[in-house]
Amino acid sequence: MRPLVPVLVRTLILGVLAPLNLAQEGEGSDEPVWLGETLVTATRSPESSLDIPASVESVNAELLRQRGYRTTPQALRNLPGVMVQETSYGQGSPYIRGFTGFRNVFLVDGIRLNNSVFRDGPNQYWNTVDPFSIARLEVVKGPSSVLYGSDAIGGTVNAITKDPYAYGRGFAGQLDYRVSTAESSHIGRAEVSLASGDSLGVLVGGTGKLFGDYHAGRDLGLQPNTGYDEYDADLKIERFLDANTRLVL
Figure 1 (tube, helix red, strand yellow):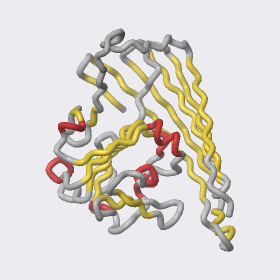
Figure 2 (cartoon, helix red, strand yellow; figure 1 turned 60 degrees about the horizontal axis):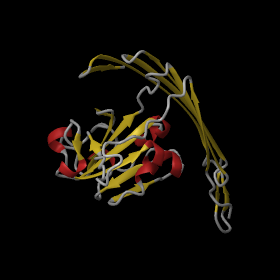
Figure 3 (tube, rainbow, N blue to C red; figure 1 turned 90 degrees about the vertical axis):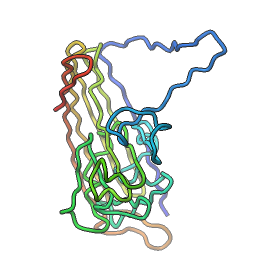
Figure 4 (tube, rainbow, N blue to C red; figure 1 turned 120 degrees about the horizontal axis):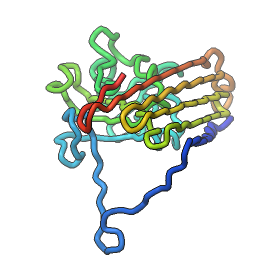
């Protein structure tokens, strides 16, 4: 058996290296500083997860990178109450509290991806969202029909895409690389963020994925026709009109 050994390489390119300010309120005293977790999915407005009347989970970009998930559905498989079915490499469908397919709602930045015209049962639509473009996944388990429609039965997943991050520096970039021996795969991601002052930011990213045929364990060996290639591109432009108003393309 050839073990699955994903290897991740990350490089940061910064136009201007700003000093890292680690000072926190309460520094120099014995009082602890609590940094509350903020989620936006459940109520469509920022709110602490402790105040939301639902079971909520979150997966951030750093965790996605550390665990080396190939696809967005795979990023949900370690959450309690969620099972992911992968009929093939190019497919992935989460079961949230026993429901799958269009009985779970998938949002990208709050905009619905799947709907009732998608076929029933496990499907491949969730696989079309590049995990390297995601800043955070928020999962609300249980019915959310009041906010997201009557088909949000098992749960709702909101994929929050990355924002431009070069504010105050003008230019920043990042390179990621993942290689796996068991599936003979290579994944590369390059992104560049540009900013003009504190009001206009741009993020451009591209991901290339080359998946070879999978090597199974024991005497199964090479599984033909299981590999595929995938290419993704994403662009986000945001303009802050004032402290409370932001336009996003």
